[in-house]
Length: 399
Image 1: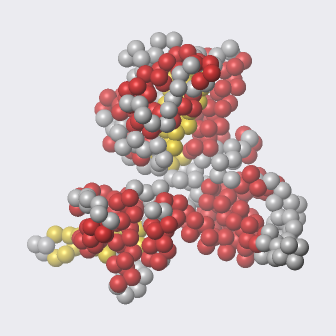
Image 2: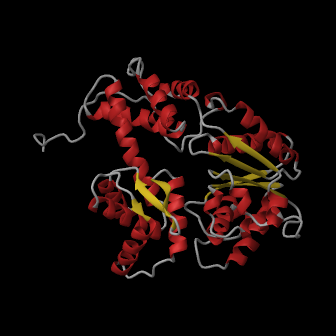
């Protein structure tokens, strides 16, 4: 046994506290860079909750990685602390609507997070109850346990039915809550999300709206430096942080991706038994982040979106050049055959067009409208941004 290979590698120390570079890590206020105005706006919107009054409902917009979720979590946690000094109890639930995409799932998750079963005597099973019963139990929990409940609906545009917004925003008005009140923070990547809402929901939900702009290179640089104590002293070469910041600012202004690249660079240095994280590690990490990002996006996509993507990738492989365009009708014809292969009912062409638009929004494909000629109208050309082999592998891995 003593002669066997050591698969754990060397004891080279790169990271001091790797948790600082995890997406799930919620930093202290002094580590939240370039979002002072946004934090102030959010605090002003929910400030009434700290005195037991009804907070303003909020919609927060902005591209991925602009600090929307981070600031919402931070400010609601701070509200809990401030409220305790006023002898007010605030409960906070965070719902990822990419994962909890139905009304029932979102309500169940909210009730589960706010519930203290030994205290309330109320059970919240993962499944098995009607949506109406989950709501009834949620109202009982909030009225029993809290003066105010703050509910963060992240990626709220992914909810299949916006009835939950009506229920939450009008819980007090409709008499569902009698001793407590509730506030909603909806977070969306789509700036025009509000336009898709029912007029009744707009009037009750959209009390405050804030847009988070992308970070610039200097802000990303400060964010990365504020997390640099994740590494041991002297491990990061001088050019590493500026290099990561420049890549992130040039491509997306996404702080989350920048932090991922920095973490991947450290992991690559460990894997290669290096004593320092170099700019070469950053370039390698950038490639890894792109693959990881794509796999994560595809894994969270609905099954039919994966089939549309697979159809796009297969058609791209058949054509000359990796950036060969695929028309929507071509993609749809192959998508239907893939549905037959998987013994799945196919969606209508109109819905597949919507899926392709969503894929463009996620920066997985590019679209360009073409003129077919006089009397023939126009059509849409779709191009994959990434290697079709990577797309196909990601689709298969996420099944």
